Length: 419
Image (cartoon, rainbow, N blue to C red; front, side, top):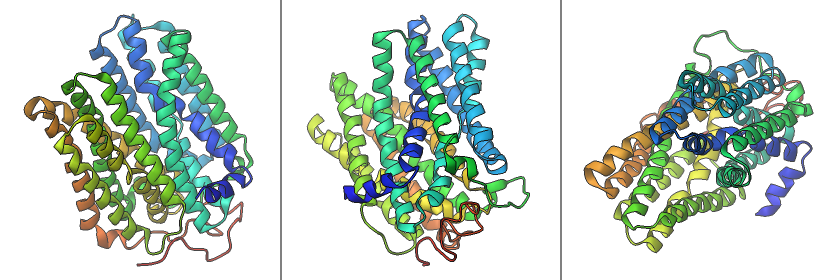
């Protein structure tokens, strides 16, 4: 199992690109907790902290596809590094100025979110030219999904460590400085410098003119909704049992399940069309969320949380393949950025819906939101089956496509098998 991942990491530039991207995404992955800790240290309320975090999230959702389109048009170095610097400066303004001027605080987090560099989509656009083989690219997508789980686990721990050693303001500054270094490492690499998007048809909708991509985004909005609702539901469950540590165990179990699922998924080759496989994986993901409504004791609930996370990373990894197949020519970075945005918006909606659900019907109802989100995601995929079965592009990387200048793949190399 590990041999497949080591094979990818041994490829020239692969380890650097993966590490640089994860480091570069630390500011985004830790923004919510960093903002909340900073505002509270400044004497601000939880309401203000939540509002600033929401503005950051909304600005990120707007900025990702716009910057992704810019990357497709102008290349990675000319967009990723300047965006990372501007985003870091936005957070630096918040750290230095504090919350004394609310308009300035809101403007600072809005700038930081809007200019968050689309490193995630950029990495996936680079994998075909770096790895040059269908199976290796698919395994890299799975490894990417697993690495995200590690980042979202380790990132908050790093923030709390920095807060304990120095201060919340120092944590904001250090994390964002590290993020700029990660982006710099990526854009200085040869694959990033030489990558060019394929010529694209001028269209104001960009990647969104693909019906298959729209179907996938509709489904993953609900996957995000399910995951976002679990964060609130888990907190309510911990309150019911009188121990904050229970929440930590539930979230850790969810992440562990995703790590195991992603590792196993990426360790083998999969036959058949990825669109069909995605329906199966999302169906299993929905099935894993439903038992959470039983809300048994903490030990059993922790086990259920781990089980519910098993199919998350495989679903995300498989969605990367589907995005690549359905993104219109010349829009691959933008398409991946739309997936990030849609997932994030869904998570925000899930968080917002789960709160009232707890107040109206208790903890079980908030977990029901997660189950409903998983089922809705599956229903979207089933309803749009004909659209998804006709991908706009059937190649992960072909000579003359997104990675033409690198010429890493033989002509006619295709992604997956047709349904």
